[in-house]
Image 1 (cartoon, one colour):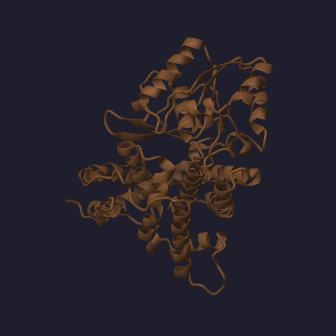
Image 2 (image 1 turned 180 degrees about the vertical axis):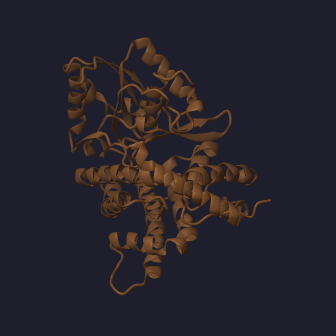
Image 3 (image 1 turned 135 degrees about the horizontal axis):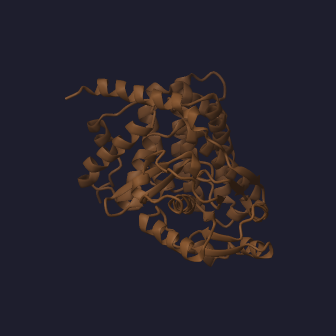
Length: 406
């Protein structure tokens, strides 16, 4: 058996090769419209591109509460026809994507507008890719497996968390194999996006909190990644500061449009950061909690984040200290060790204030070995984590999150 220290050496070599090849991928950001009402400006932009028949990808709840109506009316006014696919659920599945693709083809749609949280935007990305690629969704899993350019895609996020409107990734669930996988390709980045904080004012407090902690996780994992750059550091620090200054207000006073707009910007910046720098163990675990137990992604990230930071701290103390500074936790004279500890404590305090649990109620001892295998495979293939865990450590780590016996 190969010693784990030797495996870590090869993990680092692989991640270094990914880092030096990243500039060749030429990541781009979508043309951005920002501010209250920007979703309607995006509709005008879509009309100017010549689109006449649009597939709107969303979820049934947003349709039910009427959130889409202003955009639908605007598109009609502009002469853009559309059909709504509202079958996307949290942790979108291959079946949901194929259903959306069937609707797109039957209605002759030539572009896609995603309206919703990360699940809707991720589903729309893959529908756009499938429309132009003959291979199945599962065969797109991994890096650079979308061979032909997708249909034109536009996005309006209605939560401030995933940053999917700016990332190269789409996460898909395959219930038949209890697998959750990422499709990663620069061509999946939408052509344009609108950050419209006014659309988020009715978002319930628990969802606001979980998605906000999702954005924080993106920023933090990007900042402590070994594949970070000066650009990703800047975006991650900006995102962290915006979240620390605005998330509690957005949770406690959902009608505060300024706080909502700042959180939308934070989510976007965190998305820019982790698209290049990557994420880490938090996401590797959260993806599997979603695949096995349908735990919402932001909630899973929030539960896991402080524990992963505890483990990672010895190898990124200075980085965590800098995050503490932009979070307003430095009073003067503290050591990096003290600041790093203060930042992790702040994350725990936020979780507690938002009612986020410390344990995963659905986690089963019988699943821990399988989750470990899948999570470590994902993390060690794609993420330049600051400190590595072997399988026994990882299993022990997961057991800390087992539900407390009654």
